[in-house]
Amino acid sequence: KGGEYYIVTDSSNDDAVNPRRGTLSYAVIQTEPLWIVFPGNMLIKLSQELIFNSYKTLDGRGANVHIVGGGCTTLQFISNVIIHNVHIHNCYPSGGTNMRSSPTHYGYRTKSDGF
Image 1 (cartoon, helix red, strand yellow):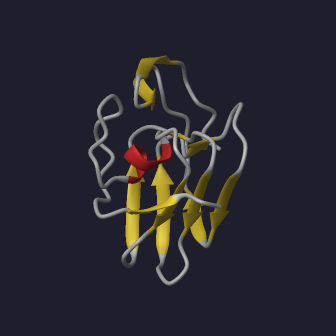
Image 2 (cartoon, one colour):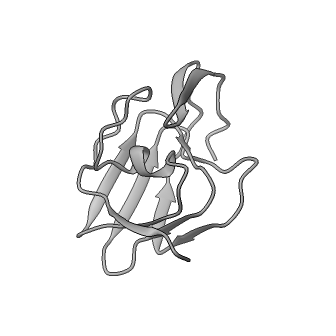
Image 3 (tube, one colour):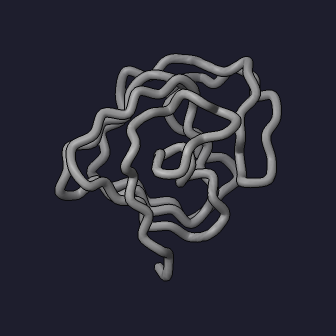
């Protein structure tokens, strides 16, 4: 509620420390509330897990959105996250690398469980 719209325009996920604007990885680490939408069908192949911050709505309605590979999603010590009509599958453990978890912080991330 009250979040700005963010449109995922780039399906890449190849820089865990400096995700590009337009990617899902960039959106989920932001600290402000966001309503994240997709302009059409999208396959997002993760190289590392997606670390969510609070107050995110991931809305795949009207598109066929698949998130696959990497460590999939991490929702830890956060609140108010809604994931709707997004397919998350074929996950596997990843990590052991530096990752950004907010606009102002990145650090070494141990291995995720792949769920």
